[in-house]
Length: 505
Ligand SMILES: Nc1nc2c(c(=O)[nH]1)N[C@H]1C(S)=C(S)[C@@H](COP(=O)(O)O)O[C@H]1N2
Ligand SMILES: [Mo]
Image (cartoon, rainbow, N blue to C red; front, side, top):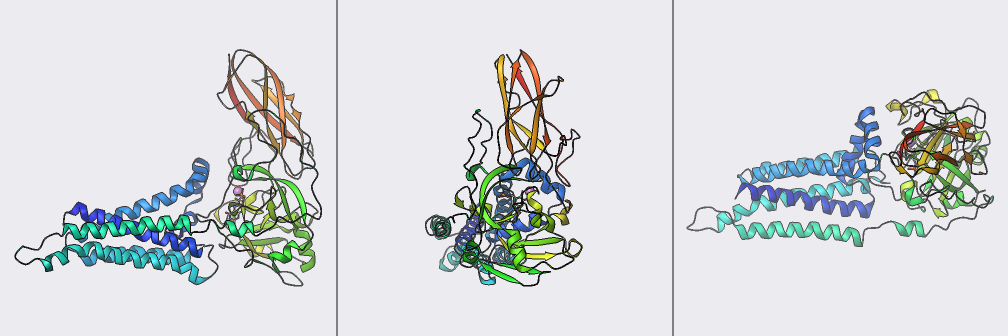
């Protein structure tokens, strides 16, 4: 057999195995082996690499990681096929099996959203089986030909090979298609949940400031930033969901989704911010949430003396540590079940997540939460703090210029700049803008109902021809002016002033 064909066969065999495995992963909710490896790569990645990935690739780093792992697989599979084509069939099949085993091991040991062990193992097991069988079929082709041959020397049965490879390719394509058709988007799980009526509704939504390009007051769910460490978004069936409340409490609780909805529900506008957000960055969004006050649940469980923290865990085993005080000091910390009038989107934590005004997401906003342990900071460490981020992280006062965009061209004359500023749970009192090195001038602030959301601001200025720099700074409601001292996101949030350079003609 020609070596090149062997390589092609190896790649097609791997592709078929991955496609079938993907279908099984989709049906069971278990980890696709590629994702099992990917999640472990994420967990192992040194902090700076992870920071870089979040910063430069944003949400694109997820597909990219998948593509990277698959590319590596394709190369190894091609080499295996090539080796098989040169007669070392056992080695080829062995390599396929070895790769499959690696996937299986990672499926067992890396974080996964699969509820039980069977779902967790099934996709990787099927992938392994298909990989071995497919590679065997591919490299077997010539041997059959040799047997069939009588007078002729052992040769390559091109027809048989093509048939095998086509059948494997068809298997892959059909599996991929089947994933689209029968594979759940999981939408029925969300459709079954009715958005509960809050016991305490928020006021009418305020009209957004109407400047083209400004962030709307409420960020639509589809535009809401997403930061997490999973490649496969968990699709939890609310009927299977349960929140375990335990630790330093008088009474352990197990709360089903229906039981959660029977409690007092509040509706609140709260702005979330990621600690990875650079000055002027996109990882901030504001939504209208409905949820159960965490303080209510804590009161029912009865917090014991000595507790100062809560360790919450998501379905995949990621942990987040939150100061107990932020959950009991009267602010609207909630177990959220709805976001902007819909059940939570899967990407944003369906069916239940935490939302705590004033704290960065990595210390408060646990998505897909299943476990809530009242404890002490000295007794545990959480996922991100293990990776060098601060244990406690209140959100820093920040302001962002949305328009004009950097290096935009602006017409000379009356011009408008606009953006958002946030200092959750303290509130924004003032936003000021400076043109070049001129004096700080007050921007106009849109009204808000409380201290937990960002505030839109607008600023009118007289644009004169030339290049100008606009800088913005906010003052929080305690009177503290946003610092101009630049700091990177690590370890507890970026600081410094956002500016934008525009060309006026
Ligand atoms: N289970 C889980 N919850 C999580 C995270 C995560 O990686 N896993 N990331 C946190 C971080 S760092 C942030 S900023 C917010 C982001 O929430 P969003 O993706 O809904 O915007 O979720 C938090 N909750
Ligand atoms: Mo974050």
